[in-house]
Length: 235
Image 1: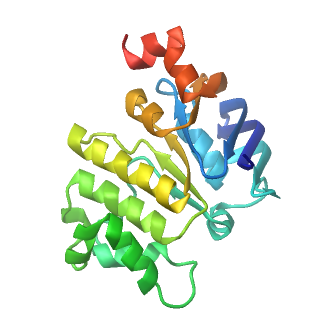
Image 2: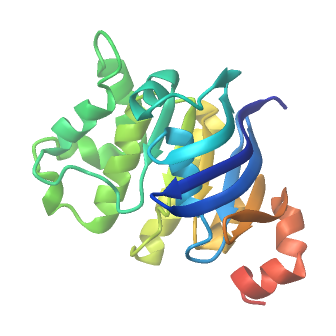
């Protein structure tokens, strides 16, 4: 398979604090790749480095094009959608207005894309006029995912989609992510604390520790690794 995204010796910092210490990873086109690790390992920062929302250095290539000097707006125009931790919906706007923001880089009618989005999230069509802030946490997470999908990205960066949600909603979100990958060919780089679910959906994964890649391999290889099983899978 061809790598859609490649990071080589990527560093990132918040002011004087360096969060990434030479991360290298690759995401094949049409795949789901999970990023695992303890709190503070640099997982969220890795996604931010790709989308250009943190100061970074090193080599980042997306679809053959260097991203090193590009900001988040340019990354979005190239086809990268970032769903941050905490959902990132605009609570004071309606569901419809939030969805429209997902298509801000598109030209022409978005109705065909809306129909595709509603096929995955049918309840959104019924709640177009509802204020996003009145939705449940799980519904807001799904709205954020739907908004990103409306952008028709080539790469979805998904940060902690299960955070604070009931298990049944987490299962539903990952089911939709799997369907988007299998039916639409969407490439996904997902940061997730629930290693069981992440490795069920992903074909490959990386384990970060202290801003560095500690382990990498297929999902089966990571599930079989003793340190991963003890630290993240609980057996």
